Amino acid sequence: MSEEMQWPTRAAKAAAKRAAREAAREAARALREEVRRAVPEPPWWSAPRRGGRQAPLTRDAIVDAAVRLLDRGEGLDSLSMRRLGEELGTGPGSLYWHVRNKEELLDLVFDRLIGEQLPLPAPKPARWQQQVKDIARRALDVLFERPYIAEISIGRFPVGPNALEWTEGVLAILRAGGVPDREAAWGVHLLTTYFTAFAFETQTGLKTPEGEARPEEILERIHAHFHALPRERFPNIADLADELTRGDMDERFEFGLDAILAGLAAAASAARAPRKRPRRG
Image (cartoon, rainbow, N blue to C red; front, side, top):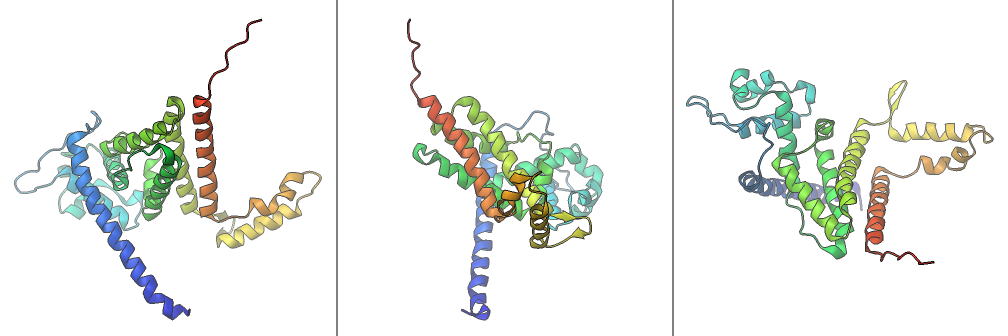
């Protein structure tokens, strides 16, 4: 099939994906309202307040505007209270009535975007590993759709209402699969660290002293360098030069995900295994 013949199908698929994402976001907005009513916010967050008569500004409107600015690809450094005030047609002082500072604003933005991954599926013990894989893949998709999320997440412990719902859902799936309590609790942190760091590094790209180049070119250089190393000093790197530079990002992500789940599954199996009674001499 020629490229020209493929194009309408690709365009239709892209349009369908956009429509599906928008429908998912609308569903997420409805769920966000439900979560807001049912789940408490961290006590250190500023409480939502009503705007004045002439400026019906709300905390949600501020977060919406912040997401719009970040979606334009200008980066976190470009997001300031002054710039946000310009977007909303008001001054920075009005924003501080609803949001304490930029750090709190980023907490709210982060929690808002976590909400786009809700709701999580109900636990199915026989399929717990596949459910966790699906959740991790969806999280990675969101991180790639909005590259700034990974940067926001650095140094933040997500405790907003949507983050609590997400964490509760993943914990329920892990525990339903028989994963012990400590491994389940630490496993959630390991999963989020893994897909966030993977997205951040992938989006950062490979660098060279001369600047950026195509990833294929950089890997070819590294591959050639590994093969040129003295085998007597680096026998393992020389033997594995092909594997060290092989595999696309999807393959490597799935490999890491499988490794994490294998460890959690091993912990679940060990917890189910009957304990041997000590033999009496």
